[in-house]
Image (cartoon, rainbow, N blue to C red; front, side):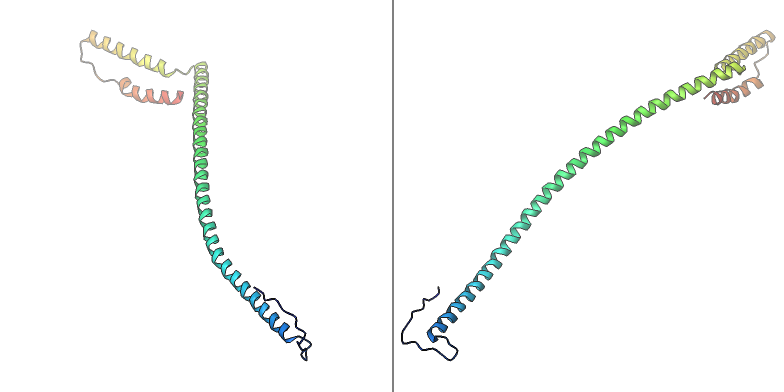
Length: 165
């Protein structure tokens, strides 16, 4: 600690106007203050380094927790969006199917009004031709020969189906 200065009657003043025991006490006091400051600085450096490391560790822990929570929330949001997308996709597919059916029905009605036979009509005619062909063959006694109608029937059948779709 700082030494107390004792006043003496026998002290003499120097040329600078200072009492020599007083100036020695001031120098000692200044030296002690300087050393106390260095000690405080050294202690602050030591404690500051420890405190800094402690804060870094706490920050790392908080960052990991925050990242885990954020990843969980992102995962939940992704699942919700995927679910919504699936629902919307299935609803849209159902609407497209309805629209396709309506379109097919209207085209079939228009073709029917124009007198174009439907795929069912063509299939029924092919069956009738086959039945008549077999009947004629049985009356004439010849082995049934492949007719042009049978060969052309599959091609007409697929063409008729494509036009109705």
